[in-house]
Amino acid sequence: MKLHIFNPGHDIALAGDNEKMTAPHAVRQMQIDLGFIPALWANNSDYILVDDTNNTIPNNGCKPYLNNVRYINWNDLQNIDKEELEVSPWGWDKTIRYKLNIASEGKLDSCMPDTIQLEKIREISGRNWASQNLLTNLLDCDKTCVGESVAVNDYEKFMNVLDKADNGLAYQYVLKAPWSSSGRGLRYVDLQNEGINEHLQGWIKNVIRKQGLVMIEPYYNKIRDFGMEFTAHKNGEIEYLGLSVFSTSNGAYMGNILTTEEDKEELLSRYVNTEILVEIRNAIASIMNGKLRGIYSGPFGIDMMIVNGGKIHPCVELNLRRTMGHVALDLTHKMTEKRVMRMEFNAGHYSLKIKN
Image 1: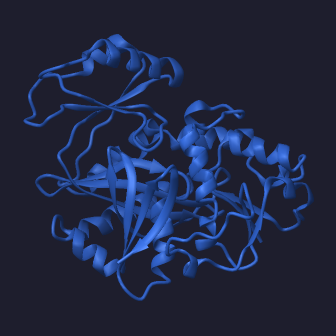
Image 2 (image 1 turned 90 degrees about the horizontal axis):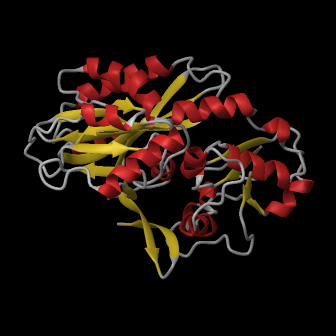
C-alpha cells in the first residue's frame, strides 16, 4: 500500500536545500488545488495526502479517471498504519521528508530516504550531473544529436566562456541555475544588443553564491518539446515507459497530448528519424542502469527538444521525480480517443483539464 503526495514545490525545495523551506504562494495554491491528482495513477485503497479532505473532487473532466482511493490530511498521519506502507511523493527532498516526519511524529521515518540518499537525489537532479553523465554520452547516439552545457563557478570564468559570435537567433545563450522550477531559473542572453546588464550580472552572481555554479548553454531554435519517461526499479534496472509530447510557455508546463505511442512517434517523425529515438532511449537505460540503486526507485523523466534542421537535443533536463509526462501516460491507458491534458490557471486557482 502506498501513501501518495503531490508536492509541486519539490524542484524549489531542491534549489533551496532547506528542510524548513516555505514554498511561494502560487506553488502552495497548486498543491491545494491539485492535491487529488495521485488518484489518477494510485491503486484502489491507496492513501492520498491532501491539505483538505473536503476539497478532493475536481470539476474539470478528471473525475471519471480517478481511482477509488482514501484521502487523508496531515493530522491523520499520526494514526496511519506504517506496516508495509510505501511513501510516494511527487519528488523526494529535505522539505517533504521533514514535513512528513513532523506530522507523523516520527512514525514514517523508516519509510523515507535518509540524509545521504536525499543528498544523492539532489546531486543527480542537478543540471550539472545530467550534463556530465547523460548529455555528453547521448551525443554519440547520432550525428543529429546536439547539445552543450558548461558549468562555471566564478563570474570571471563565466565571462571568458561567452562567445559574442552572432548565431542568427534572438539570443545566443541560455543561463540556467543548477536547480530550479518551471522556467524560474532561466535567463536568456543577447550579446549582440543588451549584453550582460547590471540586473543579469546580479542574477548570475547570486546563483553562483547560492548554488555553487551556473550553467551556460547555447540558445537553440526550438521546434518541438518532448520527453521520455522511465521508472527505476529497486534493483537498479531501468524501464522505459513511453514518450511525452508536451508544450511549454516561457519554460512553464502547459499540457500534454494523450494518445498512443504510435501517434506520438508519427508526430515526431515529421521532424526527425524516429529510429534515433530508440537509440536514445536504449542509451539512457544503459547509462542509468545501476546508478540509482540504493538511492532512488520510482519514476523519472528526461526532457528533450527538436531544434531547427532536424536536430535532437537528447537531454535538456533530467527530472528525478514523477512528471506530468507520467501522468499523461497513466491517463492515456484509460482513454479510447485522442485527448489533450492541460494545466490552467484562472481566478487564482489551478486546474488539470482533459479536452478533445
